[in-house]
Image 1: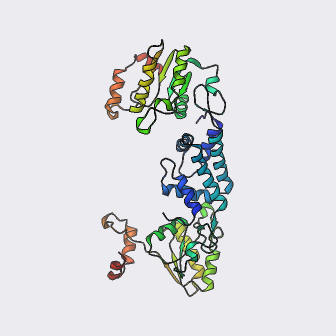
Image 2: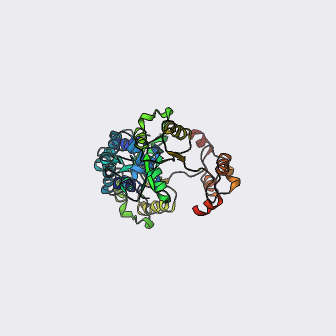
Image 3: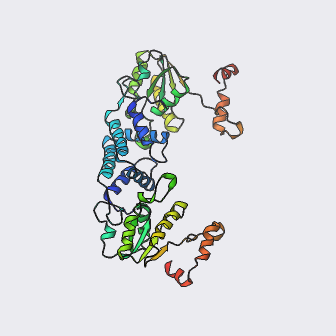
Length: 206
Length: 206
């Protein structure tokens, strides 16, 4: 692409660094910014600047937070003996949306992925082990995505805590509520059958 | 969406104002910004701030430019008697990429669209009429998109300049080079037939 302006070229290059945004989309976005009032763009850039400069991670669960101890960790209504291990803030938001989990979270900040150069030391695993060792936690719920990286991370943590007196569970995998059996993939359907639950439980949860 | 942080919520809201970007995509982008080094995000915000604050429009063609008179308008190699009327900088870039046009451009900055509240006075039509009246321009090439808005804009300009001694043309519409006839829509194919050209010309242009 040949740009008529260095400023424009620079802005398009920076925007196209974002994941999933190519040069053409970046140009479309940048031209939109130019067309709207200056203030709007300044709101955007200020919000982003604020975010990266002032954002904090909760010192307990490592979730994104504006304060030292996040709302969930500091709530008296939550059961601190159950800790759900997730990858990032999106997973916390997804589980919170269900309103089915009353425990606390532990945000790892990623998954072990040798391909991307992410080892255990890059994740918040050390502080999770300390929580387990402290004896407050009675159950750990693994809720990482069921990819190779997720399974590896689960297993890495599992190996280090399996000797402690703690229940270790993983969220159930199965076919979605409302899905038809014939369209489900065999691995998922297989897990649904192997991990079947008492019929009364299935009534309770719906 | 319930956010654990006001800063995060704010940033996601601002990013999701961009066209074609919903809340989920905005969250994904913002989390990407948080994961990368702070400097990267500052490059982005600074590039955008610079852009909206320092960008200029060429005083002659109104294309985006860093200087008062853009490279195309100030070039001695271009034929100033032919002016191509386009909507925005993307159209200039597209036509420049073909390397088939040696004239100058006139960037209207949009199309007449009563639905969006864009009237003739919002566009750079006045200065185009002045160019025509000055007598330097011998041919005007309409290259707006062939939508109702584009056609309206073409016709609005046409009405005001048709009494001047000037050739008024529009870029050719027809089926794309390499396309098969059976898959072309009938309007496009119809125009291809009505506006057929001497065979020798089709050889020259390929």
